[in-house]
Length: 366
Ligand SMILES: NC(=O)c1ccc[n+]([C@@H]2O[C@H](COP(=O)([O-])OP(=O)(O)OC[C@H]3O[C@@H](n4cnc5c(N)ncnc54)[C@H](OP(=O)(O)O)[C@@H]3O)[C@@H](O)[C@H]2O)c1
Image (cartoon, rainbow, N blue to C red; front, side):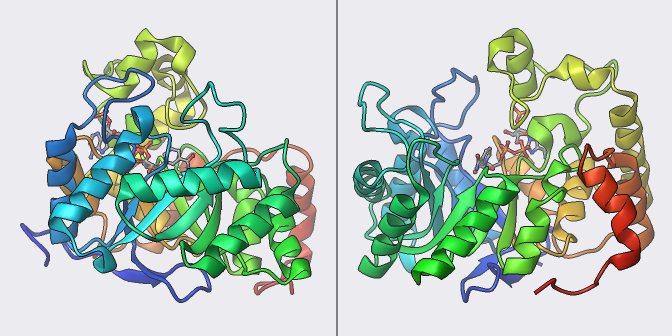
């Protein structure tokens, strides 16, 4: 046990790479004043406390991005924490490039050679380190040829400034294209995908999980609690608590997204969501686990997942979420959760799923 009855996380390789990370990764999107004006984000002191506690509980993997918080403040807090309180080599740090930190700089966005090389230097400076363990493209860039992006990131790996490369928020064909182009050009293969994946976001299973499985990429789900929806603190008639992210989105509907910033009202009238929450609560009561732990545990037991990227705004939330490690849902409970959260696949996935069953191979298609 790591502390107060919380089991230590286990360690996994990221995909088929040799990099070992704890199965729970601490997301740093809640660190620092947000560009979106979200209330209650962690100040530097609390961010440091959360990272201290995470490491004390056995975690070794922190995820940030150059655009988390105003002017890269999340990276700065991770950097000041590492400089003051942490041996750099004991932690694995991931960060991202694609979106603008300075919206006025015409070349300060996208995945061009020019922007990536500028952004990586700025991230290294804010993180107070000379290497990034995993450098992600934060999203596909339709304005830059993929070969330019791939070659630039490969140069960074060869220079040692970046150890490994990963993708985030891409489609199935884009991820496969990255894999194939790296192969064709003889570049270092990318090792992982960070994608939204949860009991309330299963479209990731339409294609991305197959690419990860077939190509040896580790999957790192983000927003495992769907921004707070899978914690049990909201329901049909239970409105989001004041100061919470969900309450913020309700008050600022223009901030709503299908990702980390879901609408309260939309889900509150969705019968399937409410039934899913009931089932999570029932299972939680049976085995003495919280709903957040059930939601994270369900992800941990999916075969392609290397580490789940958790978010926390308080030490209590962190402890709760870290409690998803060290025990297992039974196959029956997994099946129940799968069934309750299943989505009807749109065309062409519907036909492929139905007609493909008689021709399914259990192992890799290669
Ligand atoms: N690659 C990408 O594009 C991308 C996008 C989004 C996130 N991410 C990564 O994924 C990480 C996690 O994403 P996320 O913050 O959206 O995750 P999430 O787990 O879906 O939501 C976290 C939020 O839920 C609430 N919460 C968390 N634990 C709780 C608990 N045990 N009980 C009650 N409420 C709880 C907190 O908000 P309130 O207290 O305000 O309710 C917290 O800020 C981020 O930090 C980031 O590193 C990546």
